[in-house]
Length: 356
Image 1 (tube, rainbow, N blue to C red):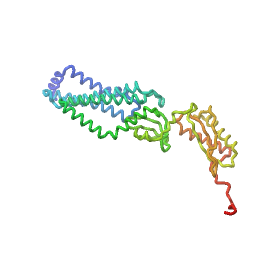
Image 2 (cartoon, one colour):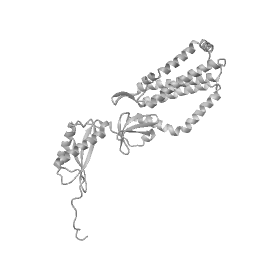
Image 3 (cartoon, rainbow, N blue to C red):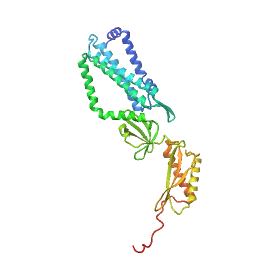
Image 4 (cartoon, rainbow, N blue to C red):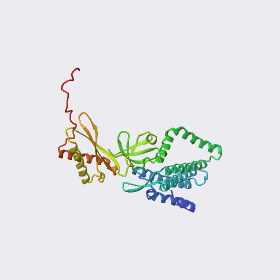
């Protein structure tokens, strides 16, 4: 492009044109701090970068289309580039409007909670419901604006486009509607929320990471990986919320051990009592103010199954507490000469009863 053409281009721009270009350039430069300021929840690096590139890409396309319109098609007021520019502007405004609306809805109607030392706003029934409603309203307005931008002036043409979108949603509703409804039911029931420690079918222990629109994410604290479950399937599972205690004492846990019949009861109770005191002295997060309950769980053929019941409130460390406390009990049993190995049956019938 020659210098006279550039001069002619810049001289043809109005104040509004300069404002549009300036705003898009500013948004490209400051997209990252804006996203960080209005980021909702814990965004992964990949998700954050995707949103960042999306915003910057839309801004850049708007600038390029705007420049093309003025440089190569200035006389065509009804050119395709103008329509494309209008559609991109509508999409960009709709995306930003939804982003900011979701942020403030989450802040106003969400629930503040401390997770991992950070205060975050977690999803609630009200915030999810209002988020869906505002997203639907913004989408409808954007679709109507795009239809008008494409030149579908008659009601028949506009209704046909909206009708096609409605048919597509109706045909696919079986794949998304149950999860959205189930997600709202889960949030409304308040059975569990983000940050809670839950135990699911199969003995899986995990922290609820997110209850999203279509699925729930759980961080498996046993082997440190993420589990994704459809919201409709979550309602079909038996889920134990370990973070919601039935007593002020905390979560009641039990470790069981098979000990031979030849070991006196008092020695077993003293061994468990000493192990509990040792564990508390080692700063294992047990509730030391509540003495352990030592009970016989089962009298089997080979051994007696003893259980020691204790309380904890740091359920996020439940795996570590179980392992550390079991280790302390093992060392205490060795110290006292009590075997935790299941013995063989020590009484056998050597002669059959007469008459048999």
